[in-house]
Length: 140
Image 1: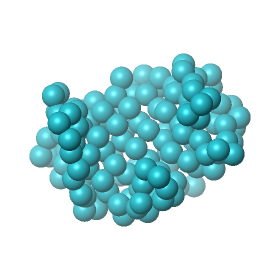
Image 2: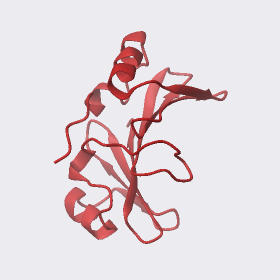
Image 3: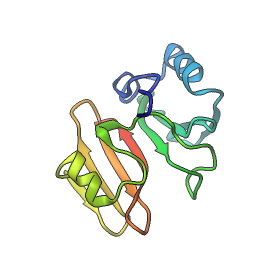
Image 4: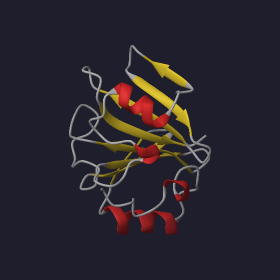
């Protein structure tokens, strides 16, 4: 069994990126690098398999992206804590749906499913062979 995340997702997603939250993220997930454009700030934690997106207009965290391995969107280490909704990297799409239930939205072309978990939304991304490879924890 993987350990629980150092910070509960409900304490991150949808919250303003204050100095306190930024400090908690750094202590929990290591040193981060910043990338930004006109609309968003991205804090990448390469040693922890996580990046955090912040909407610049609202200053709220809108996404925590969790990665199982390096790939097109991620070059760092894998995320090594428990995933939300009882998910586990490598599960087949059918296994994910059996664990998480019926998705509220899905996209076969881009290979993802999304669930509303109340405190946040979860989007599962799959490989071309149909296995869970990324999880996005999104603000509702």
